[in-house]
Image (cartoon, rainbow, N blue to C red):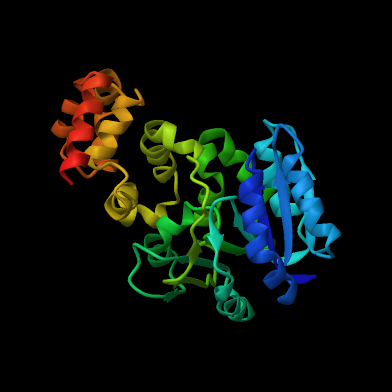
Length: 307
């Protein structure tokens, strides 16, 4: 059994996988880290790219193809298939700089339950045996494919399946929060300034076109479902993404209105949720919701020009 396996979940992004493997395939081979790729692409372009690396002798890369809509199966296999003590969940855009591998492996040797890592919104590396303290500090990296490494034995296909039904965008994250409540929990959040390598390919994540559905409504429901141990920090967690990552700044809200992600009716129906998740005063959010998509675009362009 290996110490660590990287599970990469991808969909119709062969160029990203090509770039990703060019950065990590040799360093992972040197560090004895396996790479598992779970591909839901509608063609075989990604498979051909992976085969090219395997044919060059990189036999620690393993490839699996799935039907386009089999996202839950891909996520479950990302847990079950790797023969490793720790699983590192990654997407196809978040490339961890290999210069960090030694630090990561050093912390794996210390037997932490969960290792999270990020490069912004943190105030230094923190070690914790308190689930509340750990989740509060790590809530932002928890949401990112590529920022969490976890002991395989703590993961459960059944638990993730259950959460997939209620908040599919956060099923993994919801399971991390449960795991942190286990007895004798030990976690570390690494603040690594040179964490990521920026991709040369600019593709929009699927959730960016569903910000309100995912990061307002689904996020609210997920946070409100977490164990009672976190009751005192729920309000902090609800607004954490906007507070630390500026998900719902005025220009971002204008763009979301421009794309008709929300409207006045949706805003009114979810007023309680909006007040908890979005940091701006509700009246500003409501005023933006009244704008036509065309007006929202004009105002957004003017604000961006001024800045």
